Image (cartoon, rainbow over all chains, first blue to last red; front, side, top):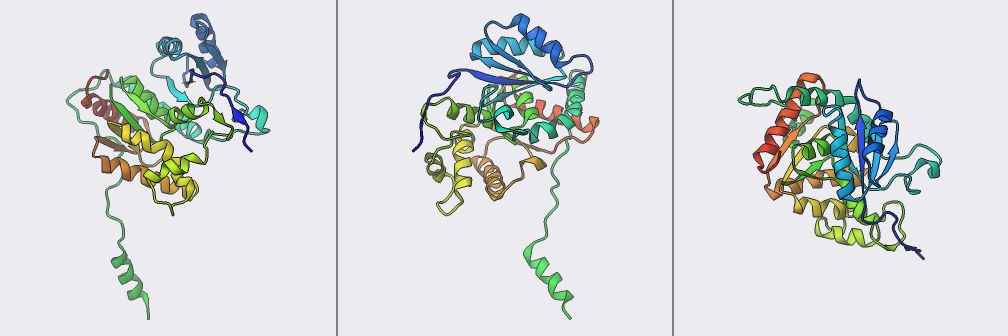
Length: 153
Length: 148
């Protein structure tokens, strides 16, 4: 029988603030966030911060933090509040699942920073040519069958 | 401000760029947050209850694995709600079991079926590609209007 569930931090939002900057560390960011936070919960992590609170309180804090280093600070939503026993590795006894996308994206994030840095000076008439999925046709079943048949003795 | 579905829906880069350029990213976190903040019966870790695969029946048939239907109960409403979508195709970390793999295919299919504006890209492998990647997303989001 399932137990009744009453959520903690109902009505709040949690945002991840990632920093990948040569000039700013998560600790600097945390100090600045503590200075301007008005009742929001801030947790410093190895990659940046997690900020939890009412949306109206969190949004001004993250907008203000973003201004510190706009091209090197990245922000996204998080579903769980910090330290939630269902996700926090302190309770799970090992590395927590779900960081694969962050791990991968942080490896390419300096390319995005470069893009953001050069965006204002970019010629507006120049059409972007981003890395796109290949549009080459795939091997169809009929051709594959012909190849197989041609190999038979 | 347009609602923009992002794929991979956990993507930090897409979530940030869409919000930065003045639109609302529709990411998995919003759906997870809604579930874990709704009182009910305990169903750890994601508060996905047996009701979710039933809701997923709207998007996938009953013989489809319940994992696909459960996932679609998260992503399906966001796809219906989306006014545009940005898809990054070479997200290898999104690969997983058959539930994940089939859900990923179904998500892309449903987005195309909706006939909303879609931008398809690959992750940038160097700084030059990064500049084109950001410029393309900026142009695309600007074309949606009332953003930045």
